[in-house]
Length: 433
Image 1 (spheres, helix red, strand yellow):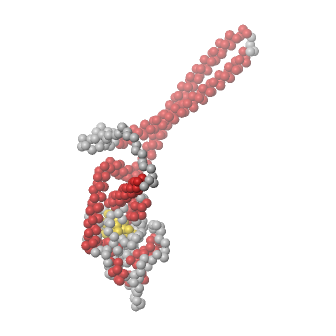
Image 2 (image 1 turned 135 degrees about the horizontal axis):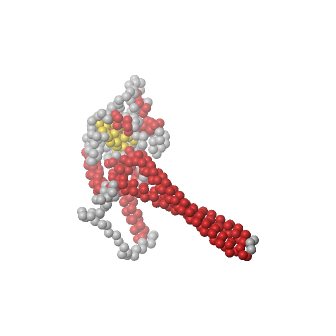
Image 3 (image 1 turned 45 degrees about the vertical axis):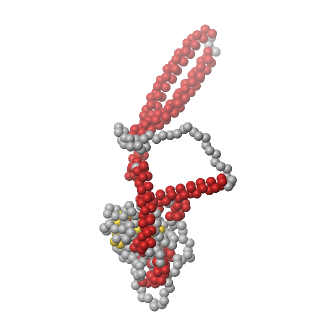
C-alpha cells in the first residue's frame, strides 16, 4: 500500500483521515524523499544525455541584477507578521465586520451607479422626445399663424422650454433621491447576505481555527517535521536491529506451514464441532481464484477477502493454538472500537478488520483519548502503514513484537492489555462461518 502511494504520489482523503498525526508526518517525509529521488534521477539522466549528444546543452541564462531580500527580525529569523496578533492590530472579528461592510458598500455603490446611468438615460430620452414633439407641434402652428405672431410664438416656445427644463431638473432630483434610497437599501441587504454567509460558515469554525493555527505554526512545524524524520530514521534502525535479534521474521513462515490447518478445520475448532477423524490438509498458500479489487467496496467483499487470503495465514488466531486471539475483532467502526476501549486503562488495544484498506486497524487506548494505526496486509507480510518499517510474517507476530517494542518513539505506545468481546455472538462470527 505504501509503495502504491509513493508510486502515484497520491493518497485517498478518506484513507488520509484514518492516519494518526505521526503516520501523516512520516508519510509526508516519505513522499518528499521520493520526490527528491525522482528529481535527482532525472537530473542525472539529462546530464548523461547531454554528454552523449542526445540532447543539446542547456543555455545559461543571462545574469540578472534583480534580487530579493527578506526582512529579518530581532532574533535574526525571517520577520513574520500575523494579521490580528500584532501590537495595535484590530481583532479578527472587527476586521471581518469592516471588510463585510466595505464589500457591501462598494457593491451597492456600483449597482447604484449602474441604476443611475440607466435612470439618467431614461430621463434624458423622455424629455428629449417630449421636447422634440413639442417643437414639432409649435412649428406646425407657426406656419399657420401670421408673420406678426412669430414673436409671440418665439416667446411661447422659450417659456415652454424653460418649463420643460424645470420639470426635467425636478425629475432628476427625484431620480437621484430614489437611487440613493435604493443604494442604502441594497447595502443593507448585501450586508445581511454576507453576514448570513459568515454565520453559516461558523458551522466549521473549529476546522478553520485549526487550519489558521496550522498556518501560524507552519515554520515551527517544518522544524518539528525534520526532527520527527530524524527520530523515524533512528526508530527504523532500532527496530531493524531488534527484529534481527529476536528472529521475528526469519523462520516463522515455515513453522506455521507445519502447524497450519485448513479453513474447514479452523472453523470446526472455533465452533467446538467434533473432529471427523480424517487427516486434515496443511495450510495452503493464499488462494488467487478471485480478482481482488483495488480497495474494499463492501462488507461482503471484505469477508470473502478474509476467508480467501487471511484464514490460510491464520490471521486472528493465537500462536500455536486453535483459538481466536482475545484482541481480534471483526468489521467494526472506529466509534465501536473506542466504545469498547472507553473504560479500559492506557495500553489496552484491539485489532479490527479495516473497511478502508486490505488490512486491519489497531485501536490503542491512551491516557486521554485513542490512536488508530492502519496495518497493511495487501502483500505477503503485515506492517504498520507509514510508521513501522518492520515486516512480520503473521498478524500475531506484529502484535507480540509491539508488546515489547514501542510502536513510535514519540508516542511510546506499548501493547499491554487486549480488549476482548462484549457481545454474543462475537463481532467476528461472519468471518469464520
